[in-house]
Length: 593
Image 1 (tube, rainbow, N blue to C red):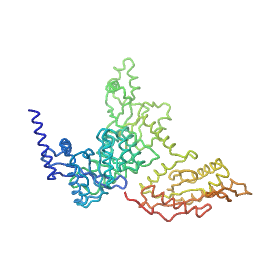
Image 2 (tube, rainbow, N blue to C red):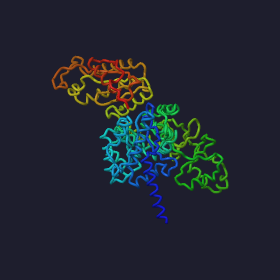
Image 3 (cartoon, rainbow, N blue to C red):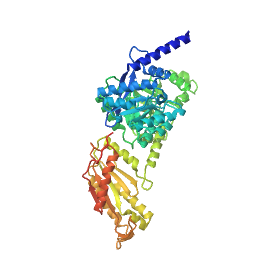
Image 4 (cartoon, rainbow, N blue to C red):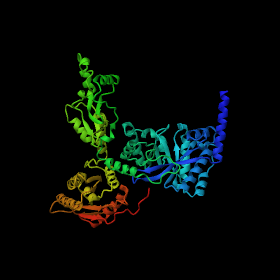
């Protein structure tokens, strides 16, 4: 009887599905996807609902029955049609993200060219469509996923890899698909503000995406804390209930509060040279000061991983109780009788450290490591406006500081130890994001190669090191930046208003240094030029090409690099020790997103 009932129910659902497909009784709802930089809606993901009174109202049920009935392709075509029609009817901005199951390619109902027919009828271009492909099948179906991606990209559609990290193949699928977008699975987004492990995974995904030129979308964002954490980490696009819920008639603009929060988060966290406590804070349940010592001792004995517990009085942190310290007290004779009912406030460690959430990690590291009495097993408390937020693990702090030192070493020039291209690009992008007025100057030694060939690499290296020293002495270290981008090429980023005066100082110091390199009575030398012809050269000179980027048109360091290259060439053409300020402030070609 049960089997018969199941068959009847399955038959009914199969007929119901055919009815919904045939009469297009499917309702699309649209969830906005926002760009974090220049906060705006860049597109919408279309999600499908069945009729309210249908057993197939929920999408999970709808698509499960479609797979069982081998009607997945037919259902997806119907969903695609109603979504495109409604998207065009509402005149929604940006791109339309449509879900697509690669396995539907094997469905007998699948027909090629249907999507283009729909788009032509509703008046949408292929460039506005993004197909989201889900890597939810085992590895042996990877070929199917790649075929689907290749099929859509050849027709001019963009492709997104959905639920990255939730499937079987993960990075392998990503590398073989080379999608336009990757959507980070919501598992890694949920609670990311409290979970350092998730932050490390997402940080790695973002790093790979940015290196490969793919755009990363964090989906499933549900809280302000998750959102601000992701903004701080440099995520490109965001989606989730916190931004907007899926609606049949969605908003076409983001709320003012969301725009403001995005800007504040970017400004607060975008300094790539100063990592802050907010990056490593973790949630830890505190106890009230009136809690008995006996209760806390039981907590420590029940969980050997617990090294300390924060004591918080109505939101205000008082300090830490150390496992080692309190268990040491309770190991003495008659300790239980003497201390069991005493409040834990009496056991707060005198070495407790409370730091603000915006304190930089280097400062906290010095605070902990420079005190010889500090117990490195005791975590520190993190507060925000004197209110308890969580704790910072000393091991996480030390690891983060070590990582930052290694990162700085990896991206610095081995000769001068000055930052290289990556920190420079990050700093310029940071200034552009914050709309901070700045001047960037390219410093290049004229005829350095002939000098290097004539006097040897040791003499050439000495010149480069001395130029690095001159530049470091000329800048305002609190607000300016000097980078060594290779060979004899240096770049200065000035926020100081007297940047021209500083550049003139650099030229004067370089001229003095250069004059000392050759004998006073023989300030010329013979060497080969870049074409291999021998000719006579004089003392080394420095060309500085400068530009003040227009903050309205320059959006990334690529735009600034284009302007800077032109300014550098103009400075070199002038010859001698010269400073050239370009009048051009906008790149000749600004690509839209």
